[in-house]
Image (cartoon, rainbow, N blue to C red):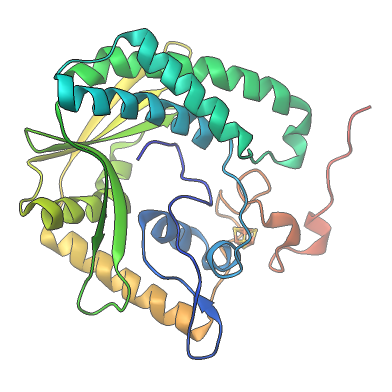
Length: 292
Ligand code: SF4
């Protein structure tokens, strides 16, 4: 669950065919729910057409830090002790390097700075993994690590799925994120992911978590951690199921509205489909001139 954004990949779904012979999704995860709330057309491109665009650098840094935390959690579930800082940071660096080999999305106007951003990403990953090791890791005694949970719901014909990075022996689900700036608290309280994962934990263990929180590693000049505790009620999940039901009806009917063009994510820097999107007028698709 680490990452500023999950990019357009994530644990997504593979296509299956509906009664029209069109491809549709096989299961619902938080990446699809988030993408659908921003732009159903983007879901069509990624999950129906299978046009995969790699995540941006922020998500790749998140993947690296996630790897460092995962290595620590897997060791600690056996030893009861945190790994030394250099072990966590080395694992994070390796995770970052591996993830960028799978591709990184840069907008056309970022081409000149891509190499520099990739190099700086190593330092950011190592710094944030170190911060995780000092500020967050000591508070976590894992009970579940990297647990993929699938949950069917009566009124949906495909299941929900999610991979919980860590759940503690004292029933705390800390969700680790990396970000360029502090989160507004409202973002944690409305997160689809927390609503879904709260329910997945109850499905897996028979009990709801006692505590849910987003633990943000903020990569400001002086890096810091931010902990936002949140909670969920049964009606939060009921509403999520309604959203998923409506999404599936629209997918089955082949209805994929575009994003609000004024939404921050409907821009070349945030949407890899921008340049080929039929909902962006041609005069806005002029590529920036390359510097000599
Ligand atoms: S460019 Fe805008 S409308 Fe088109 S896929 Fe991207 S977010 Fe959606």
